[in-house]
Length: 442
View 1 (cartoon, rainbow, N blue to C red):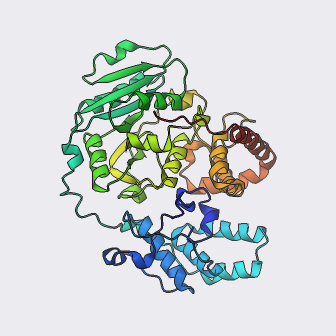
View 2: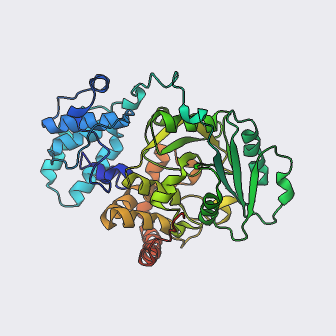
View 3: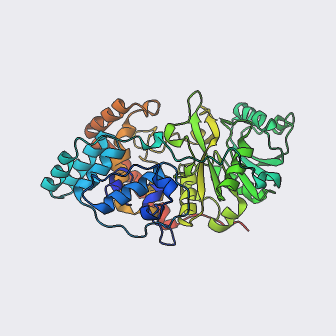
């Protein structure tokens, strides 16, 4: 991380890790093109010149820099005051206070910490993502990849959601790009093969008796005839140009992965996801990638079966392999969030919210991911940041005041929460000992 205090507010972010070749995602500021530097805001109020450079690098990534400038391999230690200044510019004030409390409680010099906190109290948050970097040539770009008309295989696993699946299949019937097949891995009970007959699509229906999401996706990828894979779900809605826009993104950015954007039905694309950028996450419900990606990083890890974050783990493997993944806002989809079927039926609605009193919090696969890639210390920091707000029900997860209330409520529920976390930690340890269940794509 360029700024060390990011480890408290983003302890398990992709970009906090160096890639396997020793590089980071952050471009060396002095190596950025002049046209990019002109769109950044140089902050000379840091006490360290290196902090000013790191700030420019962070801005560039945040605002959508996707170029190939050399990146930082090692970072210098910065003054505490500069760390707090950076936090205040990029995060809500509650998180700055949170970091102060964590630092003091973990035996850092309280006078130094409080001094850095107070001396930056007039610094205000800067909405950098409101002015993203421009991609002026996108509109007039003629994608040669689309002109080559490659076969695209669309992968859709489904479980007891025929009503919702029908909607997305109708969206595929009107796609502007037509050279595609759909592999549906149907785990529904009861199975209805006649459901697929009315659709004017090339659908390969694979019957899978075991309700297992990651097995389903792996099976579909293995059966795919296309060398380009599009990943979708059974409870989303997609626009007419979904496939075409994903293909164009792969071509325009010379990317390995086009990572589409989700947003809940009836809402809009989040502002910070409304422009092209290096993807900081991967979702199997909306993405397109070359089949070679699976040959390089292998298939999905079945340690995440009936749990969460299997797609996040796959995306992290791609990041560590230095594969180029672009967040693509134009290939968006609406998330219907069906109340039945899928992972909800398997007992997993949310990674941190439990349905039973002594159920693990978070779901063990979450800690398996955190501990395996980031280490136990970062996993603990992630728990401190994420568990208290999870006390508030899922439907209120965007209400900041209620989330803050959840932090206070968690103090009174600490004995119960500790038991839930202990159960999750123990189950995650078992997964770590067993190791990943990832098979190769032959």
